[in-house]
Amino acid sequence: MPPLPSELAYVPFVSVEHMMGLVHHIGIENVLIDLADEIEADFKRWELFDKTPRVASHSDVGVIELMPTSDGEMYGFKYVNGHPKNTKEGLQTVTAFGLLADVNSGYPKLLSEMTVLTALRTAATSAMVAKHLAPKGSKTMAMIGNGAQSEFQCLAFKAICGIDTVRLYDIDPAATEKCARNLQGTGLTVVPCKTGEESMEGAQIITTCTADKQYATILTDNMIGEGVHINAIGGDCPGKTELHRDILLRSKIFVEYPEQTWVEGEIQQLDKDHPITEMWQVITGQAPGRTDAKQITLFDSVGFAIEDFSALRYISKAIEGTEFFTQLDMLADPDDPRDLFGMLERSKG
Image 1: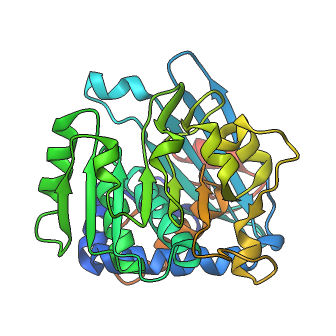
Image 2: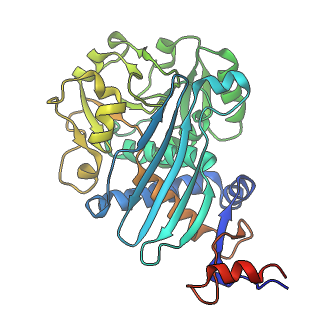
């Protein structure tokens, strides 16, 4: 008989099926609230993290990225792609997986799917930020772009910010129908709209979430009135934007990690000396958020590794004592750490 691996050789693995089961077990709105709390807590200790722009490999049809970070005790990374063409081929635009490891030993502690988890953490981050920046008492959100992320965004804003009405618009009416159908029974009032302008009627919060890999003008300057909060989260990369430049010039802009946002975000349209505020500084009280009821606030979100780290750490704790993971025999663990070859030979049985 070949030797059995020790417990150290096993790594908890959360599959897509496990992740969906865990979300239903906890409740999706509870998960979104928990994730927002976890992410906000890590924003409060932002300065402790290793930070680097994601490592991106761009092609004509998409991008593949690695997003690493560490707080000195744990290390995490996410592999993620963004391929807008995939939808027409029956594939997801974005897929992802992630890993959490112990800095002291270098041993992995969690391997997880992150396609579903990324949608959850993105929505939780959006709503967490809006809690700090959106007009007080906001009840209506325009959701422009009704693809895979849209329902998560709507539910996060309901659970965390108190939104009760969402106005949906997508250039593909089938996407709007899908989103409206999925949001039935959630307690939200859902209003399908035929134009972007119509979707913004009465909205205090405007979320844009489109995936085309090009400079685009989803929102024009004349569409944006005073006092709104814009949550620009569409798939980001160099040469891809959603907002007209004039909107940026009228807005107070908040970002995650400037070195990454200048390359991929809406602000790539601006001069590098244009004032922006890092969101962690608002959350820690080092910088003001919204200072005027008539002010336009803009969260130029591109997604950052610390948010994924927070999500992975949350999942690592959430699966304890549950059935929503599998132990993978992932690490070689010889009795003598110097005798890896001997372990291989003895495995002949």
